[in-house]
Image (cartoon, rainbow, N blue to C red; front, side):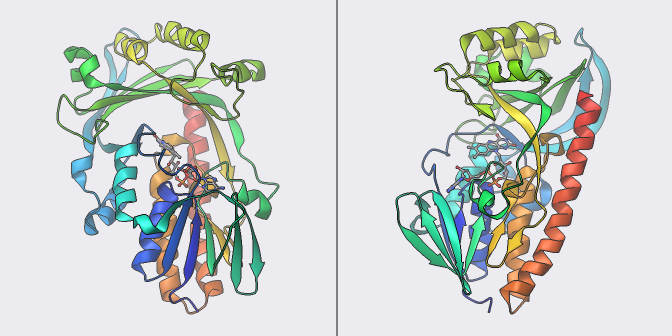
Length: 371
Ligand SMILES: Cc1cc2nc3c(=O)[nH]c(=O)nc-3n(C[C@H](O)[C@H](O)[C@H](O)COP(=O)(O)OP(=O)(O)OC[C@H]3O[C@@H](n4cnc5c(N)ncnc54)[C@H](O)[C@@H]3O)c2cc1C
């Protein structure tokens, strides 16, 4: 039956928190386990706050437009800084940290634990979940919301792994107070772009570290998509200042000095507004862009959601909204069916189609920008 289920969620980022909200609201008992609990509050950079997701949060009094900043225009610059193309386009942004803190606050502390899931076993109509510290938990459902590099997913789908798209995203955040007024003014109400030869850099304002959206308290967020097809160069970029080689990203403050200097020198080729932005950002970081698709999302009493199931390229601006929709639809499917199997079947059909469509859209957009 689908009433009062005991649910364990592995991963306490956006997907895990939305699952706790949506399934908790439907009366299920949801426990979230996050391997990096306590470390996420001040991480991340800018994200698009999709209207449906925001409306869901607003209806529950969790967050509203007050945590967002909206642009009314898109402008594409020429190399000399003049405007090549401008069009009206409304986009709503927030900070990953701002949204995370709101969602986290909406989930009971008693149900959000530090812990790393290392495996599970199906036992009749239950799942037994193993944790890194040797403990075990039992649940009616296990939801894997571990992101694109989920290790628990490997137990279900060992053949599925992220596929590098041939380019990386350099990223940075800077307090507007550290920038000149004229530079900040360029971004007021405007989502600004520069497209170079297989390069794309964009920037927009997001709330400050404490969520402030008033002028003087905000941050500027930039993302620079850069073609890196050569494997040796990619490995060089992903080796951090302590010599640790990463597969997917190097965190703020960990880029090697040589890489950071190279980044700033390459940014000199951009319109002044972007070269200054990159030049003045203290701890830029890098993430590889990759695609990920799973053939199934539901497996007896276990399901995959959010980035653990599909990673669409950031151009779609929909990763967080997709994780939210996966979770909200799961809550509705369980509500509307008497058996977990039939709820899962209905949910999976819908969410597989949505995930596949978004990944395709991300690839199409990426190819048009990056060649
Ligand atoms: C710290 C952080 C910062 C981010 N910043 C941005 C950003 O600025 N802009 C943007 O567009 N996207 C960002 N993202 C990605 C964004 O959250 C996702 O693309 C999207 O919201 C889907 O979320 P998700 O919960 O499915 O996956 P993710 O957000 O990737 O979260 C997965 C979570 O699972 C945890 N986890 C993994 N394995 C285990 C395990 N075995 N046991 C327990 N926990 C586990 C991870 O620590 C992580 O917190 C960020 C993600 C994280 C984790």
